[in-house]
Image (cartoon, rainbow over all chains, first blue to last red; front, side, top):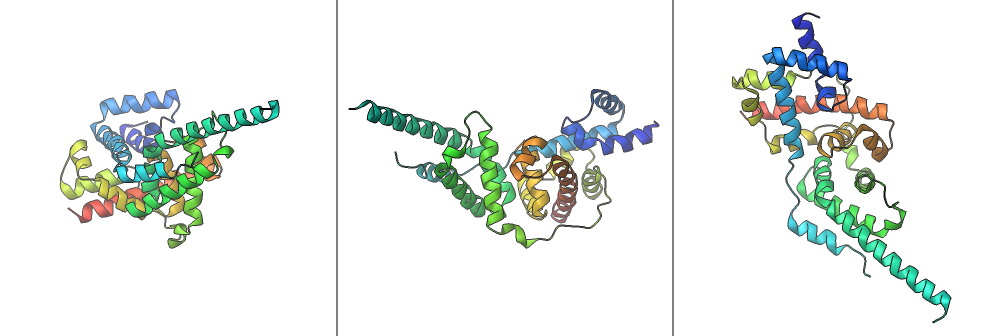
Length: 75
Length: 193
């Protein structure tokens, strides 16, 4: 693959890469390209950051936690 | 006390102990369940209602849970079913528009609009509020899968089990759902520059 083709391929496998759903061979190929290509590296870094941002949702209010606990059945 | 009635008393005591253990384990998972509830709800209030209904139902039907299986997935199955039952899913029709943009689209769009060229700076242009707003615009079938996998950190197989859909459908909805989310995120993030 040419460098441009590798960039296109890396864009296609971005999601399975972040999901850790690539074969070992594919992963190595992607990592090899990322080492050399700043353009793709920045976009991969951004994607991983976006995933982390999504997971940092606002926490539950303590009052809700208390209400959930009160829903427990009487012994 | 006869042997039968002492057996009965022992069973009752064991049941009560199992139930308390179940309740404690379920409550310990509440923060994780809430993240998903918030992701599939339009507002914090709706997420809180959904949590209370989920836990009320879970506590009532604790005996249908098989100890040793995935309790978080069991709770999320109740939550997603309740969300369907409440008809919240009727508000939007699935988005059938073709999505031509690739996976670098969101980054490129923010970079173009803001002139930021470093990944961390581009990322700083996005906030929790942007994510919540963009998620609420994703059609429910796609959103449920994105929330379970990307926020709830469930495997494709667990998400398939929770939503009662084939794993291939999880993967295709995830692919499309993430694209829609990025398109929406680009809209909300760029509008607020």
